[in-house]
Image 1 (cartoon, helix red, strand yellow):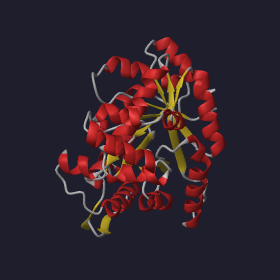
Image 2 (cartoon, one colour):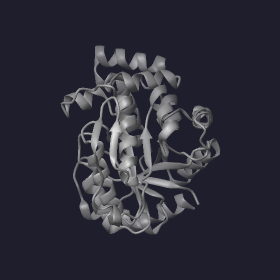
Image 3 (cartoon, rainbow, N blue to C red):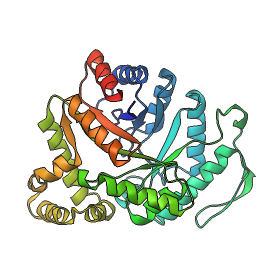
Image 4 (cartoon, rainbow, N blue to C red):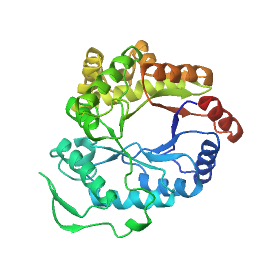
Length: 332
């Protein structure tokens, strides 16, 4: 069986019944995980609570929540509660986000992001494990020895934490501490190298290189592939030009620096539509597949061959029976 992850709509119109129907179909079809993203749309925690109550087997998690707008203790409270509701099926997808969102949406200084992320992971793990909270970090000084008051009801004493990280320092943190890595999109020709580099980094911390889950993405099952490819083109341009230095520098690291430079220049001088057009077809098709489910299966199999643990797939089909059949085919 292939380990497939799917997401739910976190922005735009909310059709709660359709979301829960899709989640139940995924649950019954053997989909491995359902994730909920969070940026400046809906909060992920509320949707996860609904999904936890309405499903039975599928793993559930965030992709991702940031390490600034909630305290680590609040995240531990949220997810231990969610883990109880779901009978131990939660995953915490965590990352720093970037200064544009943290400072201009949440109004919090984007200060020491990697240090903060490390301390979040360590504090959350302490609280879930039931350790009295005596923690002395560079950001958090916690001396009173608090512990969660519902520890006796927890289904487990560790909830997996997956880190969404891109830069060398944050990727190293994922290799050192995380249970999973939400890998940034790389061109298809770079998949094996991305996995090998990360596994080597995990081993350098004395950990089993295969012990950390690596999630890849990029597959879209759709009857309108050109629409999906245009979405990928626009999203790529937006992240190259408008989402700050973190994403921009990552494009340089994965060999798309010249494209990112040109897209930034064009967006600045000619606007967004011209910038979208500056993202070439070969870049779009290296970063994503869009089309029938058979092609998505081939994409996922190639990711498995490269060493990724699981693959995220977007599905545009809305008919419940057809969507369930797509789930079953993807899982195999």
